[in-house]
Image (cartoon, rainbow, N blue to C red; front, side, top):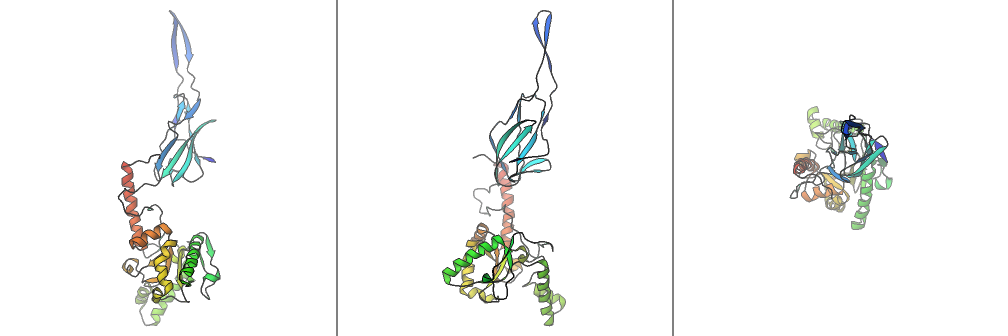
Length: 339
């Protein structure tokens, strides 16, 4: 179904022309040119454009000097959209773009593509799939709640942790990973934490601070120490709904890595779209102590790139930004083409 855009981008007006044709010496006959629009067409049947760029195409009217204005019709598939009065490619895909004038119309096929990286590039190829991150530099709002949260069945949670939620995509991937791990090593994982609201994170952080103060630390010292294990509200990835803490008991500790489940998780979780969010040798970047039980869902392709290149999420997102710049530069000399 084609959805009509509400702006006109091309308007051509022609003034009636009076032509004089000599019939015989001393006599003439007046003829008025008909400027009524007969048809609309495009000079090709398909064009290609990069995502983020404007769609530049012009309809051709018959007759060329017809008195006509056009309205664009955009399909409702989300490939194209209107930004600041321009038709822009919003995501990759194939779609139709229509030009309409009254009862006369024409369509052209549009292929939208993400800008490619240079052939020799080793930067993340999926730079355009932006990953959300919550850390000491990126704060989520108190009202942020992820979409598609589902309740995790009790048979996947540790005893006493029966009201846990995660995004549907995250839990679906976790279930597959759990089953494969069980058949591979006969091990078991129990989920002890998943989605946390902003309010819940506030409670946990304040509790951690109070525990250190009870040990005789000053408020400043307690807050600094608490940040090593507990994020401040708005800075925890648990609020994203795609982070899970696992255990083979009811607790988590650094010895988890030395368990069969912990080792299997570290070696295989990327195959299911998960990463160990806080690696042991990235503490200076993440500012969180090593947590072998803390996994974050990012999707198989992103997780595989990070695993192969031994990156934490902060490093990966920085590389995505580099890749976006490289792709934009490459696209300048390599316009999108129809294949």
